[in-house]
Amino acid sequence: MASITLAELAEKLSAELHGDGSIVIHSIAGMDKAGEGHITFLSSSKYRKHLAECQASAVMVKEADLAYCSGNALVMKDPYLGYALTAQLLDTTPACATDIAPSAYVSPTATLGEGVSIGHNAVIEDGVILGDNVQVGAGCFVGKNAVLGANTRLWANVSIYHDVIMGESCLIQSSTVIGSDGFGYANDKGRWVKIPQVGTVIIGDRVEIGASTTVDRGALDDTLIANGVIIDNLCQIAHNVSIGENTAIAGATVIAGSTKIGKHCILGGACVVNGHIEIADGTTITGMGMVMRPITEPGMYSSGIPLQKNREWRKMAARTLKIEEMHKRLKVVERKLEDSE
Image 1: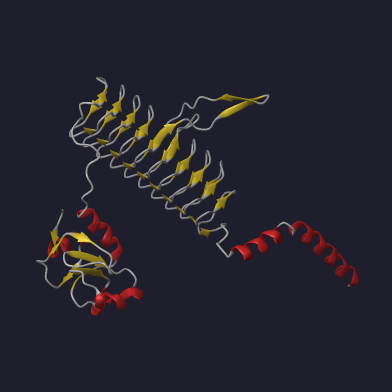
Image 2: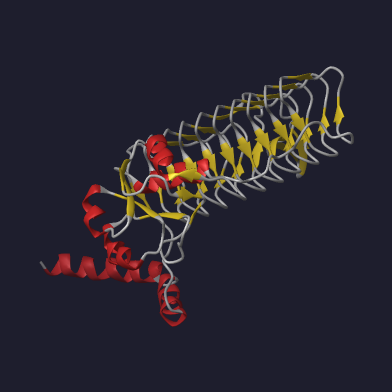
């Protein structure tokens, strides 16, 4: 198990140490479950009342909350960020692969950097380039001429199709597919005629993609995912979509083809985004949002219906079905009022 002294942790976080720097921290825990050897954090002052009962060896807090701490503390502007960085330092997640497994197939024309690891039954096809310290998990497929930048990691059973280009320090979770055909067909008198998808997918640095997500290759041009993008599990990114830097997309979101999403956007879970539209930089769409038209001004947008008791929802739904009738009756009333005036 990874461990670090509180003084060492304070230095790495550029935090202000209050208390005994020699104590050893081996893990992070929630404030209500933390004990000896744990560090916890307080990111919202509304929970400061729990500090008096906290049994953690240390707490990460803001300056305003320090007076409420009875034990060791690290003071920083953003304790939640401190939590994230500490979790990285204490992370014990195993490697996706170690060395090159005997059961892996690596084409003799593939190029492997220093320290590459490839798991059991993985397939690395002709012309593939794997940068230094790339990890390819068990059962992965990396298609012809694909490029994976240094320190990129693929967990088990990821499929990377031909010609896909991925930057450095990316993380792809299990069963995700990158570079599959986009949904492109022409209709010939009721018969669907497949359009070969000749573009590819280009992914920047530090991109993380969750489990069982699909990113389709472009039809003619490429599907583009910029640096720092994070995409959750079970998302669908269609062909020729472009996603700007540091945008975050939560689980089960579906983005139709040729949509351009700006930088620093946030899409909540189960959003649906129409194709061939643009979404401005800095836009937030709350969960279950349905985006049918372009968004040209940044801000927060919503369209999902909040949960309510079934009885109330059924009444609302029944009334919704009568909106057109009610609209016509209202027009009649408005005309009568106008005539009376």
